[in-house]
Image (tube, rainbow, N blue to C red; front, side):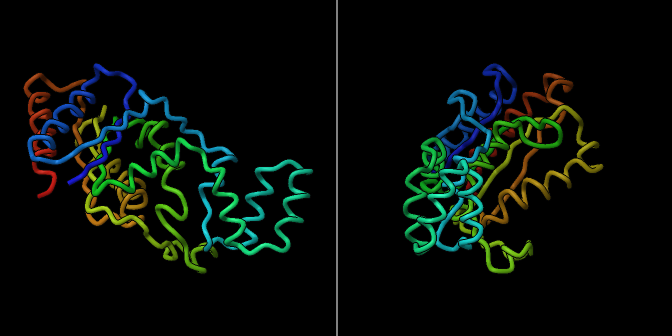
Length: 241
């Protein structure tokens, strides 16, 4: 299986990085191919800006929504001419033109995702979620027309109107934490399941989503850490099971 592993931790000597190494070795020993995207190493820009709007359109987007996006990314003079140009254009013509201006860094990441059969995400839990660089990667890369689309009802605000576009077999999320298992069983885990596992990965269409936690990595003893590393290796070795 061809796996894309996205890693987010600023410290190359962190225990999280050791987890990455063991997981990658397990994948290799099982015969999988694995490409690692280290978001800090490539200095990925996590901030979604107006220029990113070009990545959020396709032929299914309502024309009024498209006009609002172009208006939001243009100054008054540019919008005046854009509005005149849009007045006699078909949506497909507009989409073809606008998508020529897609940010290259996002296009590269989307191509990596499109070429993978499965995804793995490895990062610490910060403020009951992903590090900002990883959250921003999802915001900029999991775009409309790439990760999902919307029905008419979806554009009217109905969450059931989301159309999944991903075809990946699996997504595995591996999280290292500060707090212990009791804290996650008591509420943090269900919150992350809803916001990350379900909305972030199941809704775009990934068939199987798993989330593995390595709890209290800064507080546990050496034996527990070694067991965590063995588990990380097994997650890679048994990835396809």
